[in-house]
Image (cartoon, rainbow, N blue to C red; front, side, top):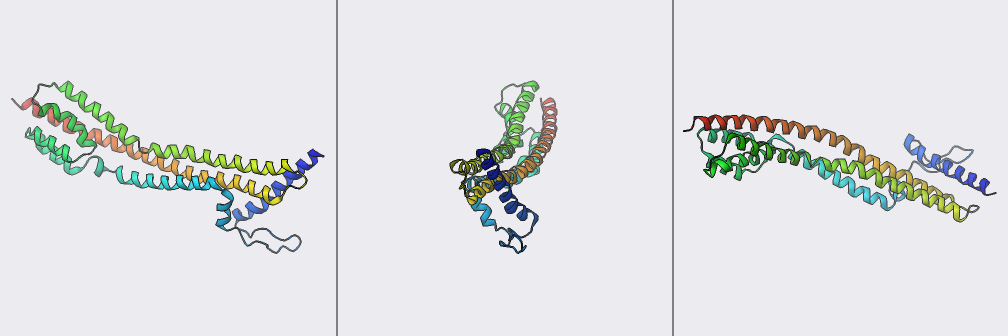
Length: 255
């Protein structure tokens, strides 16, 4: 008897899932009346999906807002302008050519950016008038360059974290919805309400889709911004090496 009721319950879940979800995906009208083919529900409105998802969708909504904010932030900061401004590069080149370490250091302090931070670490020992070797200057350049590279690579990691966490939250909604569906069957197999079963299955499917809809774009933008950060790091290294080579040339010619 119990096995027969269990099979009946599973059959009910599958039929309800097919009637409710597949027509919406296919773009067809919703549930149709048996024998007549006339639609009882003209499609499924978005409000139904939202109500079916339950409180899990509010969490996913917060994740989606945060994801969009991170994407706009990365578009703003991962650009050549904020990382290595051309005007600062020209100014540093002019000051280094004449050996004006104090003025070059002041330009780095007044215009904070990764390029300024790298050369601030190099110019501070020179500005203090203490004897430093080219090896020490190179070590200061590479040490600060590594820190700035890490700082450029860190922000895109937020998108990777969201791409991992969002599906897990969606799967939590999946488990929660299936618990509701199975709970309705286990409490009263013979009088299990189809609406309760459908709500549990709907929550399971809607939250899963919601988590994936956040994770997939987040992963795509993470790959894009990671490559963008690596290109900026490579340009920062090139410009820093060129300015450092000019600095060493000036030091050798300065008595």
